[in-house]
Length: 448
Image (tube, rainbow, N blue to C red; front, side, top):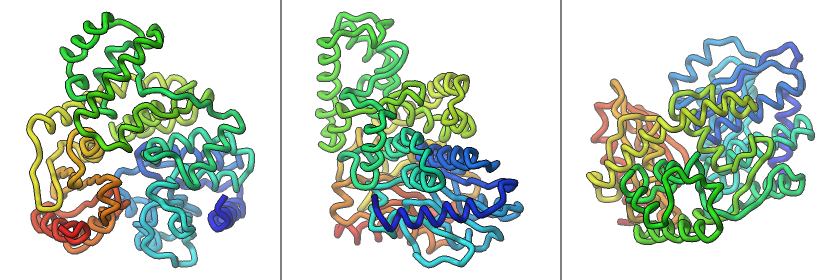
């Protein structure tokens, strides 16, 4: 375990435990799978320690969201999976604050009433080795060591943040080892197939996205006919020989699309199942949370993490509509293509909550690795920007977090994130100037 990170979490735990049990602690987190699990871990730890909490999940944690928080009367606010990029705003809120974050570290020093825990300040790579949920888990254990049973939720956050690509490593690996040693999760090797029937599992597969199958009824039916299977066939009824045939065919589709090796390696890989999470495979659980958060039902996702069975069943139904929206955009991208600048590709999305999701999937399964992909959503008088790269481009110098931060700040906007994934928000009348600025920055990074 990283000693510096351990000390920071222990100090943060003392801040929490120093306030009266009658206090209600405010928890603010991001609305994706990592943010939802990070919030759930912190809220469970607070509740077990005798504190009431009020949690909110935010899509955009910049000025508007934080202005609302600043008008509240809070003794302590805990920010998870966000905060380091919004430090200047948080420092102006009249409340003690704890930041638990893994995004780019803007500055180490904070005002006295703000305590910051950031993986990057401890020599841990926040892109690949730690996420909001894994950091929140160590914080929860620092409050009470019995919170070790929350490790499956931390692993869901790691999975949802795609930090299994290239293998779970660094600080995250210590949590995986701990969960396995204590039998909180069970390991198995397999492909990602879930749904009530094999037809559903193939038709609604968005990540991986299989060209000619995902969202394509005729394509799925043709494959099932070729395999001699009925569309009502349940996955649990498949024998090993048939599963191997399906696995081989799905891999062939991805190889044909020239997917990167590190992406191919994620298709058939070690997977983890947790009895405490409705006996779910962790990527399946993370997908459900993403659907709830980004599909507009954030509270449902948090309820699922708290172990509510009805919420879990409702989330499965809710996910179908969410996936249909994603499939519609992916199929459109595959058929219509994208616009291009010198150093990046971009397209316009209908929904800012889905833009980043579509962007990430399309980067891995539709387009080649030569350029990052940017999604733009025009919303009232603003544009919401999401962008995704790949490990190959990062190795060549790509830093999308810095590109978004620098370009957005030129035009009065806000931006940031990771080298491989980031976002920005700014006024819509600055769109073209912003895109040109981003083009110059990324061109310089990639030397093109």
